[in-house]
Image 1 (cartoon, one colour):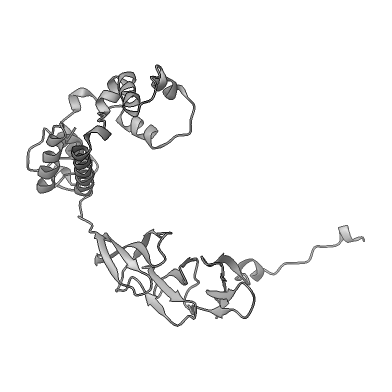
Image 2 (cartoon, one colour):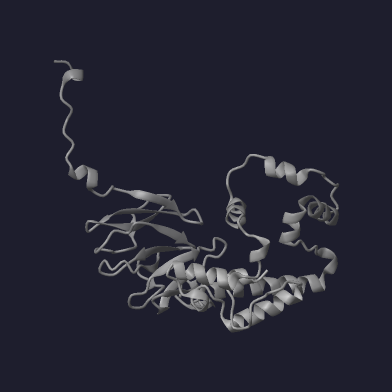
Length: 302
């Protein structure tokens, strides 16, 4: 029997499931160190050593569950961990000696999420957690060295109200800039763009000092492309009719009832105070809202 005909050696089942010797190697931002995951007490932990050589330093000591991922933040290592397998993951920061370990999102049954790692800032990240209310996540700017956090966005508990607040902030900023720099602004109404794209596009090109381009919008519509956010917006709004404009309260309230939602006064409704502020900003921008001050659904304003 030759070598090709001999039986292949059996591979033990445990080899398919045991931890690797090293994995997830990552170089530090300053290029001086390399970090990686390796087993400690049968759990994957973070080790760090200088790129020039030398012994590795274990900087974490998790023994209940593996560390599944980590990342560098300046000269610190950040990773997520839970407690007792409850899957309420906290964000943890540790220095390169493994001595200065900080829970950046402390609290019983707190669940944290990373919103932005802020690549241009070695000391801070943007984190959301539900310490204040288990059902809602607030957003914080957190110092990874000291653990100090600053609230930058409080969850209002109403998705339509949050969207209205965001719109109000953007509309006010745009109106302030237009008032201060009228020659640098050109208004485009979505309705006008849909009704007469060639005329509106010509106005935009004129404002930018570009040469007219007849047929530009038609060519854009015909061009093959991968689906993007605008395609889905067009698909979702293709059924909007003129006779539905301003009837958002009734339309969305009936939809919410069919879907078991809260109706016009629940999750679909914009709180009255927020509705009045957005309506005032809308009227200042030449827009109209047909709903009353008691609150409206998102489609009531146009």
